[in-house]
Image (cartoon, rainbow, N blue to C red; front, side):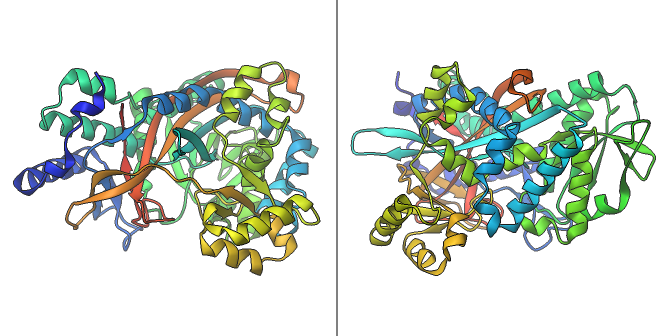
Length: 492
């Protein structure tokens, strides 16, 4: 049976039934911690609200979902290998660093830790690869929007919204057989916590060692991070201590020491075993040079980093663009054409904008003529600073040639819209035409080396998903700013 045939008729959900479903969902969300701090009190958990969500899981093509899950282990491995290819990373960003100070800081740190010698080759990658279903005249195809290697978020919310959606479908009379077939298992937080806990036990005999969460000062999504910590509590019977510090606090309280001089110490006493970055992906997290010095200190240490600086530098839009060029994916999979094909099938068209290149002049001319067909992107993660439609033409005219080289141009993805109810705190649930962005969570743990023959993978998995949906009229904005909501997949 096609599961879409028994998907609830959203147009028929109204009145008292809608009120009952929404009340039940909101109460359940509060009861299980599917909540966020409020936007006007990001500094306190005293008052929280439900994370915005869809009332039902949104229909998503099964073949495209399975394609995204199937390629994730190869995607993990691709970025693990890129992170240890020093020459590739430096060459890829040679034009970007001329105007992008943030990327320049990261390349400087990579150069310095390589020059001094990597003190910890074990590395932990947590990734979320984001996709949309692009509608062509003939079919729907999977197209990668971006890959995130640092501060991968909302895993706890995605776990909970999946269960919430299962409950709502049950309330609407959908059979258990259909629910099990249409709703994929979703456990991203369990996987990252399990990897951290197992490696902690294997690699650190000092029971007083700590896992450090590097965080923002006031984060609306702090409770999502806490769920990782609490899962670690469960797995270790609270034998693993976790602490949270901003980069500013790290600059004041962390030092290198120990027998070899490279242990990361908290106030010269407790050893940091794992550094888990939930901040550090945007310039605003480094208020002064002191914060950058703290990042360098952590990178020089023998603590395991999630991610280490090479993985974060591999995460730029420039690397994403270069990978679309002939032979670049193959560079990292020289004897695995099947993996290369899997990865390439997800790529959207992306163009570099280096100056003095005829290809740049050609694509700029096309973008000025048809700006609605393109998105102009800087190097930052998470869609920050993207330009759409007429904004593309305006920015192209405004940027210098050096500034242009720090951006990439991407084909605009036009996904198929579906209808669902958007449930937001203190607002009436609204039936809305929405588009969704699928994120697949992946995790890889391994030994790194600047010699590719010495790279060693210890574990590699795909372990969950999230859909972030928003009104089809919205161009930008995530969950925290109120544009998008948490969603999950109903496969058909």
